[in-house]
Image (tube, rainbow, N blue to C red; front, side, top):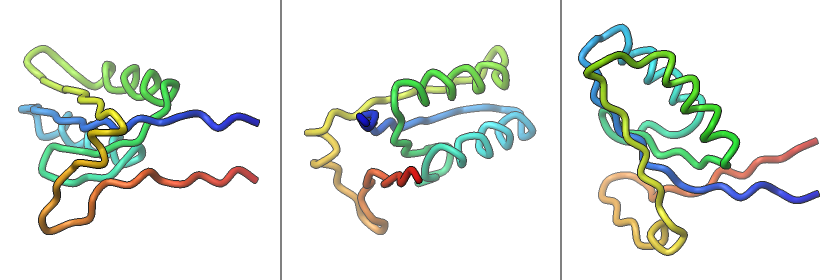
Length: 95
């Protein structure tokens, strides 16, 4: 069985509504690590990215901003972090 390849995405958002921002935050917590205020690091397969974007689209309104920044494998290895660990891919075990 082939394991789906994942990509590290930096997801940043700027949402003025406390209620919508909280909903987006809770949704993103299920997909990755909250590393900075309004910023997540998420290892996503292509299918997970599609699924997440569809769910986020339902929460966003005019004036909200959400950005996905993919990092190539070379770039992930060059991430510099002070004060917290570097992003690492989560291992998934299928039983």
